[in-house]
Length: 275
Image 1 (cartoon, rainbow, N blue to C red):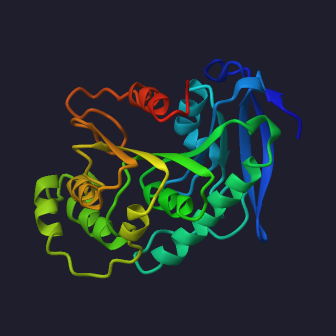
Image 2: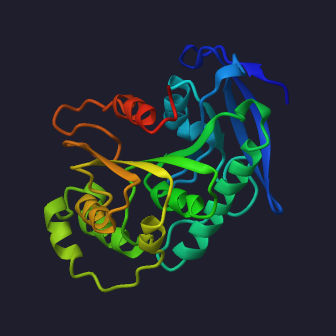
């Protein structure tokens, strides 16, 4: 499909191309956003989904970040959602290992597609996403050296079982759930099934990675994640804490959203993605 110039003011100077990404027998519906001037694209992002059954339009939050940074962006309908083929699966600890590897293969199919785009010859390729994507992106990056950087928003460095246990304790922030501090206190005694465990993957990752974590996130165990990242001590990782931030990057004290560009732009310049 030919490039369509986007008239929406928030994507000013960008075009959008509807594309199909092939991953084995499964076709993924996707949208490829590029600056109208393609001669100086420095970076390209693949937007990776959280646990929800979301289309590429549902992850516009991250697409918008990429375009504001002047990058090319590829976003797709999650497997089994929207126009993408395959079967969507709701999260389960028992099925997490197989499901996450399947989702990572979809990310790698997107990476492979982008590597054949001539306008991206000098661009560094990265991944961006939140929540469940915090497991999927490192898993994909561990299998492909073309992934040079990642931005993980509210992701976890502990197992699927531990995260699920924590979110059950807090009720994902429900008023009847435990406080974040209480849930963390109980998490240390967790002895259930872990399902997918990212620890070995994270230890050996070479991709530069920015972890953005909110101190008031009731969905994921932020303290446990920070402790694990510090234990792993991967020099390619950097942590950005959002004081009073929740799972949606909102300051729970002020009610205002954090602007992630305040952290991404300097970091991407520091690691050499942006000039």
